[in-house]
Image 1 (cartoon, helix red, strand yellow):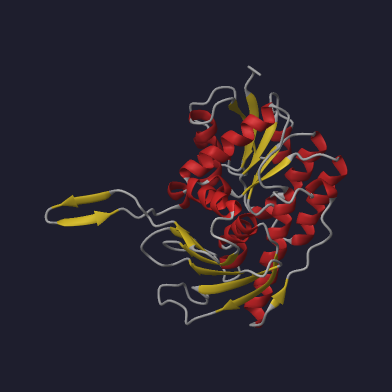
Image 2 (tube, one colour; image 1 turned 180 degrees about the horizontal axis):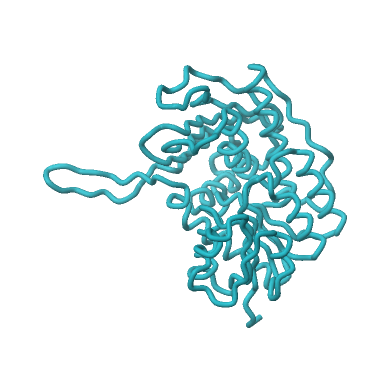
Length: 341
Protein backbone atom coordinates (compact mmCIF):
# COMPACT_ATOMS: atom_id res chain seq x y z
CA UNK A 1 0.00 0.00 0.00
CA UNK A 2 1.58 3.28 -1.11
CA UNK A 3 -0.92 5.67 0.49
CA UNK A 4 -0.13 6.95 3.96
CA UNK A 5 -2.35 5.96 6.88
CA UNK A 6 -4.17 9.08 8.08
CA UNK A 7 -4.19 9.10 11.90
CA UNK A 8 -6.38 11.13 14.23
CA UNK A 9 -4.50 11.77 17.49
CA UNK A 10 -6.76 12.42 20.46
CA UNK A 11 -4.91 14.39 23.13
CA UNK A 12 -2.03 16.81 22.60
CA UNK A 13 -0.50 16.74 26.07
CA UNK A 14 2.84 15.20 27.07
CA UNK A 15 2.07 11.78 25.57
CA UNK A 16 -0.03 12.96 22.64
CA UNK A 17 2.48 15.57 21.51
CA UNK A 18 5.20 12.92 21.55
CA UNK A 19 3.08 10.62 19.39
CA UNK A 20 2.38 13.47 16.96
CA UNK A 21 6.13 14.03 16.65
CA UNK A 22 6.69 10.28 16.27
CA UNK A 23 4.10 9.88 13.50
CA UNK A 24 5.53 12.89 11.65
CA UNK A 25 9.27 12.28 12.08
CA UNK A 26 9.94 8.65 13.02
CA UNK A 27 7.25 6.27 11.84
CA UNK A 28 6.93 5.42 8.16
CA UNK A 29 3.66 4.82 6.34
CA UNK A 30 1.52 7.26 8.32
CA UNK A 31 0.67 10.94 8.66
CA UNK A 32 -1.20 13.01 11.22
CA UNK A 33 -4.56 13.86 9.67
CA UNK A 34 -6.38 15.34 12.67
CA UNK A 35 -5.73 16.26 16.30
CA UNK A 36 -8.27 16.78 19.07
CA UNK A 37 -7.62 18.48 22.41
CA UNK A 38 -9.82 20.63 24.67
CA UNK A 39 -6.99 23.20 24.69
CA UNK A 40 -6.80 24.59 21.12
CA UNK A 41 -3.52 26.39 21.76
CA UNK A 42 -1.88 23.17 22.93
CA UNK A 43 -3.17 21.33 19.86
CA UNK A 44 -1.90 24.06 17.54
CA UNK A 45 1.51 24.03 19.21
CA UNK A 46 1.78 20.24 18.85
CA UNK A 47 0.89 20.41 15.14
CA UNK A 48 2.98 23.46 14.23
CA UNK A 49 4.69 22.91 10.89
CA UNK A 50 2.51 19.95 9.88
CA UNK A 51 0.54 20.28 6.66
CA UNK A 52 -2.99 19.05 6.10
CA UNK A 53 -3.88 18.59 9.79
CA UNK A 54 -7.27 19.66 11.12
CA UNK A 55 -7.56 20.65 14.79
CA UNK A 56 -10.66 19.95 16.88
CA UNK A 57 -11.89 20.43 20.43
CA UNK A 58 -14.26 17.45 20.14
CA UNK A 59 -12.58 14.03 19.73
CA UNK A 60 -15.57 12.62 17.85
CA UNK A 61 -15.24 15.43 15.31
CA UNK A 62 -11.63 14.40 14.76
CA UNK A 63 -12.73 10.82 14.00
CA UNK A 64 -15.00 12.17 11.27
CA UNK A 65 -12.39 14.51 9.79
CA UNK A 66 -11.36 14.04 6.15
CA UNK A 67 -8.53 11.59 5.58
CA UNK A 68 -8.79 9.78 8.94
CA UNK A 69 -8.12 6.03 8.56
CA UNK A 70 -7.08 5.18 12.13
CA UNK A 71 -7.10 6.62 15.64
CA UNK A 72 -4.43 7.03 18.33
CA UNK A 73 -5.91 7.85 21.75
CA UNK A 74 -3.49 9.66 24.08
CA UNK A 75 -5.96 11.64 26.18
CA UNK A 76 -6.43 11.04 29.95
CA UNK A 77 -7.87 7.61 30.82
CA UNK A 78 -11.38 8.77 31.85
CA UNK A 79 -11.85 10.21 28.33
CA UNK A 80 -11.03 6.95 26.50
CA UNK A 81 -14.27 4.96 26.46
CA UNK A 82 -16.39 7.20 24.24
CA UNK A 83 -13.89 7.56 21.37
CA UNK A 84 -12.92 3.89 21.68
CA UNK A 85 -16.51 2.79 21.18
CA UNK A 86 -16.97 5.36 18.41
CA UNK A 87 -13.83 4.09 16.63
CA UNK A 88 -15.12 0.51 16.81
CA UNK A 89 -18.50 1.61 15.45
CA UNK A 90 -16.78 3.34 12.53
CA UNK A 91 -14.54 0.34 11.82
CA UNK A 92 -11.39 2.35 12.53
CA UNK A 93 -8.28 0.61 13.89
CA UNK A 94 -7.29 2.26 17.15
CA UNK A 95 -4.18 2.37 19.32
CA UNK A 96 -5.26 3.39 22.81
CA UNK A 97 -2.78 4.39 25.52
CA UNK A 98 -3.20 2.70 28.88
CA UNK A 99 -5.40 2.58 30.81
CA UNK A 100 -7.78 1.43 28.08
CA UNK A 101 -10.64 2.46 30.38
CA UNK A 102 -9.89 3.11 34.06
CA UNK A 103 -12.85 1.16 35.47
CA UNK A 104 -13.45 -2.52 34.75
CA UNK A 105 -17.15 -2.02 33.93
CA UNK A 106 -16.34 0.42 31.14
CA UNK A 107 -13.43 -1.74 29.98
CA UNK A 108 -15.78 -4.72 29.70
CA UNK A 109 -18.15 -2.64 27.55
CA UNK A 110 -15.27 -2.07 25.12
CA UNK A 111 -14.41 -5.79 25.10
CA UNK A 112 -18.04 -6.74 24.44
CA UNK A 113 -18.40 -4.14 21.68
CA UNK A 114 -15.31 -5.42 19.88
CA UNK A 115 -16.27 -9.06 20.41
CA UNK A 116 -19.62 -8.24 18.83
CA UNK A 117 -17.80 -7.19 15.66
CA UNK A 118 -16.14 -10.59 15.45
CA UNK A 119 -12.70 -9.15 14.77
CA UNK A 120 -10.15 -6.99 16.53
CA UNK A 121 -9.75 -3.28 15.90
CA UNK A 122 -8.12 -2.13 19.15
CA UNK A 123 -4.52 -2.33 20.32
CA UNK A 124 -3.72 -1.15 23.84
CA UNK A 125 -0.54 0.81 24.57
CA UNK A 126 1.38 -1.51 26.86
CA UNK A 127 4.64 -0.50 25.22
CA UNK A 128 6.91 -2.66 27.38
CA UNK A 129 6.03 -5.58 25.13
CA UNK A 130 8.03 -3.74 22.45
CA UNK A 131 11.08 -2.97 24.60
CA UNK A 132 14.19 -4.88 23.52
CA UNK A 133 15.04 -6.09 27.03
CA UNK A 134 11.50 -7.20 27.81
CA UNK A 135 11.26 -9.03 24.49
CA UNK A 136 14.54 -10.86 25.19
CA UNK A 137 13.27 -11.87 28.63
CA UNK A 138 9.96 -13.07 27.15
CA UNK A 139 11.82 -15.16 24.56
CA UNK A 140 14.06 -16.64 27.25
CA UNK A 141 11.12 -17.62 29.46
CA UNK A 142 9.13 -19.04 26.54
CA UNK A 143 12.16 -21.09 25.49
CA UNK A 144 12.09 -22.97 28.78
CA UNK A 145 15.85 -23.09 29.28
CA UNK A 146 15.59 -21.66 32.80
CA UNK A 147 12.76 -23.96 33.78
CA UNK A 148 9.42 -22.94 35.25
CA UNK A 149 9.21 -19.29 36.39
CA UNK A 150 8.70 -19.06 40.15
CA UNK A 151 8.85 -15.33 40.87
CA UNK A 152 9.14 -11.93 39.23
CA UNK A 153 10.81 -9.13 41.22
CA UNK A 154 9.92 -5.73 39.77
CA UNK A 155 10.92 -2.12 40.47
CA UNK A 156 9.05 0.95 39.20
CA UNK A 157 10.45 4.33 40.30
CA UNK A 158 9.70 7.89 39.19
CA UNK A 159 11.52 11.11 40.02
CA UNK A 160 8.37 12.75 41.38
CA UNK A 161 4.61 12.41 41.14
CA UNK A 162 2.53 15.01 39.27
CA UNK A 163 0.03 17.24 41.09
CA UNK A 164 -3.12 15.41 42.13
CA UNK A 165 -1.48 11.97 42.12
CA UNK A 166 -3.23 9.70 44.64
CA UNK A 167 -2.21 6.59 46.56
CA UNK A 168 -4.55 4.50 44.37
CA UNK A 169 -2.83 5.82 41.24
CA UNK A 170 0.43 4.16 42.29
CA UNK A 171 -1.42 0.94 41.43
CA UNK A 172 -3.94 1.80 38.71
CA UNK A 173 -1.61 4.15 36.82
CA UNK A 174 2.01 3.21 37.57
CA UNK A 175 1.79 -0.52 38.37
CA UNK A 176 -0.67 -1.12 35.51
CA UNK A 177 2.41 -1.61 33.30
CA UNK A 178 3.76 -4.32 35.62
CA UNK A 179 0.31 -5.95 35.65
CA UNK A 180 0.38 -6.37 31.87
CA UNK A 181 4.07 -7.23 31.72
CA UNK A 182 3.65 -9.99 34.30
CA UNK A 183 0.65 -11.51 32.49
CA UNK A 184 2.54 -11.38 29.19
CA UNK A 185 5.92 -12.62 30.44
CA UNK A 186 4.45 -15.52 32.38
CA UNK A 187 1.48 -16.33 30.14
CA UNK A 188 -0.62 -16.48 33.30
CA UNK A 189 -3.52 -14.53 34.78
CA UNK A 190 -3.16 -12.67 38.06
CA UNK A 191 -5.57 -14.02 40.65
CA UNK A 192 -5.03 -12.03 43.87
CA UNK A 193 -3.34 -8.85 45.13
CA UNK A 194 -1.88 -7.80 48.48
CA UNK A 195 -0.42 -4.32 49.11
CA UNK A 196 2.09 -3.59 51.88
CA UNK A 197 2.76 0.00 52.91
CA UNK A 198 6.00 1.05 54.58
CA UNK A 199 6.28 4.41 56.28
CA UNK A 200 5.85 7.00 53.49
CA UNK A 201 8.94 8.75 52.19
CA UNK A 202 9.50 12.23 53.59
CA UNK A 203 9.67 13.39 49.95
CA UNK A 204 6.14 12.19 49.18
CA UNK A 205 3.38 14.83 49.17
CA UNK A 206 1.27 14.89 52.33
CA UNK A 207 -1.19 11.99 52.40
CA UNK A 208 0.43 10.03 49.56
CA UNK A 209 1.27 6.44 50.50
CA UNK A 210 4.56 6.23 48.64
CA UNK A 211 6.31 3.81 48.27
CA UNK A 212 4.23 0.63 48.20
CA UNK A 213 5.04 -3.07 47.78
CA UNK A 214 2.44 -4.83 45.63
CA UNK A 215 2.29 -8.63 45.62
CA UNK A 216 0.43 -10.57 42.91
CA UNK A 217 -0.45 -14.26 42.83
CA UNK A 218 -1.00 -16.06 39.49
CA UNK A 219 -3.08 -18.99 38.30
CA UNK A 220 0.18 -20.80 37.47
CA UNK A 221 1.49 -20.66 41.02
CA UNK A 222 4.03 -17.87 40.50
CA UNK A 223 4.45 -14.75 42.65
CA UNK A 224 5.12 -11.22 41.40
CA UNK A 225 6.27 -8.40 43.66
CA UNK A 226 6.49 -4.75 42.61
CA UNK A 227 8.22 -1.95 44.47
CA UNK A 228 6.50 1.21 43.27
CA UNK A 229 8.12 4.47 44.40
CA UNK A 230 6.93 7.56 42.53
CA UNK A 231 8.92 10.19 44.46
CA UNK A 232 12.36 8.58 44.60
CA UNK A 233 13.90 11.91 43.56
CA UNK A 234 16.79 10.70 41.40
CA UNK A 235 15.50 9.08 38.23
CA UNK A 236 13.09 6.89 36.31
CA UNK A 237 13.92 3.23 36.83
CA UNK A 238 12.15 0.07 35.68
CA UNK A 239 13.64 -3.33 36.47
CA UNK A 240 12.44 -6.92 36.36
CA UNK A 241 14.08 -10.15 37.49
CA UNK A 242 12.63 -13.55 36.67
CA UNK A 243 13.58 -16.28 39.12
CA UNK A 244 13.11 -19.74 37.64
CA UNK A 245 13.79 -23.35 38.63
CA UNK A 246 17.16 -23.44 36.81
CA UNK A 247 18.35 -19.84 36.95
CA UNK A 248 17.36 -16.20 36.85
CA UNK A 249 17.43 -13.30 34.40
CA UNK A 250 17.35 -9.57 35.17
CA UNK A 251 16.65 -6.56 32.92
CA UNK A 252 16.68 -2.79 33.45
CA UNK A 253 20.16 -2.26 34.87
CA UNK A 254 20.43 1.33 33.59
CA UNK A 255 23.38 0.66 31.29
CA UNK A 256 23.46 4.18 29.90
CA UNK A 257 26.20 6.66 29.06
CA UNK A 258 29.10 6.82 31.51
CA UNK A 259 30.85 10.20 31.53
CA UNK A 260 34.32 10.48 33.10
CA UNK A 261 35.89 13.90 33.64
CA UNK A 262 37.75 16.01 36.21
CA UNK A 263 38.78 13.01 38.27
CA UNK A 264 35.28 11.58 38.58
CA UNK A 265 32.64 9.55 36.78
CA UNK A 266 28.93 10.10 36.27
CA UNK A 267 26.38 7.69 34.84
CA UNK A 268 23.22 9.09 33.29
CA UNK A 269 19.89 8.04 34.79
CA UNK A 270 16.74 8.50 32.69
CA UNK A 271 14.37 11.09 34.15
CA UNK A 272 11.27 10.23 32.15
CA UNK A 273 9.44 7.24 30.68
CA UNK A 274 9.54 8.83 27.23
CA UNK A 275 13.34 8.65 27.45
CA UNK A 276 13.62 5.14 28.96
CA UNK A 277 11.11 3.60 26.55
CA UNK A 278 11.59 5.82 23.49
CA UNK A 279 12.60 2.89 21.26
CA UNK A 280 9.71 0.79 22.56
CA UNK A 281 7.20 3.51 21.70
CA UNK A 282 8.73 3.84 18.22
CA UNK A 283 8.46 0.08 17.60
CA UNK A 284 4.96 -0.07 19.05
CA UNK A 285 3.54 2.67 16.84
CA UNK A 286 5.39 1.40 13.75
CA UNK A 287 4.00 -2.11 14.30
CA UNK A 288 0.51 -0.69 14.72
CA UNK A 289 0.78 1.40 11.54
CA UNK A 290 2.16 -1.53 9.53
CA UNK A 291 -0.65 -3.82 10.71
CA UNK A 292 -3.38 -1.23 10.16
CA UNK A 293 -2.25 -0.61 6.58
CA UNK A 294 -2.60 -4.36 5.98
CA UNK A 295 -6.03 -4.54 7.59
CA UNK A 296 -4.72 -6.37 10.68
CA UNK A 297 -4.49 -5.68 14.41
CA UNK A 298 -1.70 -7.10 16.58
CA UNK A 299 -0.25 -6.43 20.03
CA UNK A 300 -2.00 -6.11 23.39
CA UNK A 301 -5.75 -6.52 23.02
CA UNK A 302 -8.85 -4.99 24.57
CA UNK A 303 -8.98 -8.10 26.77
CA UNK A 304 -5.52 -7.21 28.08
CA UNK A 305 -6.79 -3.71 28.82
CA UNK A 306 -9.82 -5.13 30.63
CA UNK A 307 -7.75 -7.62 32.64
CA UNK A 308 -5.38 -4.84 33.71
CA UNK A 309 -8.34 -2.73 34.90
CA UNK A 310 -9.78 -5.62 36.94
CA UNK A 311 -6.43 -6.43 38.58
CA UNK A 312 -5.79 -2.75 39.33
CA UNK A 313 -9.19 -2.44 41.01
CA UNK A 314 -8.38 -5.46 43.15
CA UNK A 315 -5.08 -3.81 44.03
CA UNK A 316 -6.80 -0.60 45.11
CA UNK A 317 -9.18 -2.64 47.29
CA UNK A 318 -6.18 -4.36 48.87
CA UNK A 319 -4.54 -0.98 49.48
CA UNK A 320 -7.67 0.39 51.16
CA UNK A 321 -8.51 -2.67 53.27
CA UNK A 322 -5.02 -3.86 54.11
CA UNK A 323 -6.01 -7.41 53.13
CA UNK A 324 -5.68 -9.82 50.23
CA UNK A 325 -8.06 -9.06 47.35
CA UNK A 326 -9.12 -11.68 44.79
CA UNK A 327 -9.24 -10.94 41.06
CA UNK A 328 -12.44 -11.98 39.26
CA UNK A 329 -12.46 -11.77 35.48
CA UNK A 330 -15.53 -12.10 33.27
CA UNK A 331 -15.56 -15.04 30.83
CA UNK A 332 -13.09 -14.42 28.02
CA UNK A 333 -14.80 -13.99 24.60
CA UNK A 334 -13.66 -16.38 21.87
CA UNK A 335 -12.14 -13.43 19.99
CA UNK A 336 -9.37 -13.29 22.61
CA UNK A 337 -8.91 -17.03 23.08
CA UNK A 338 -5.34 -17.09 21.73
CA UNK A 339 -3.23 -17.89 24.85
CA UNK A 340 -0.25 -16.06 23.36
CA UNK A 341 -2.29 -12.82 23.45
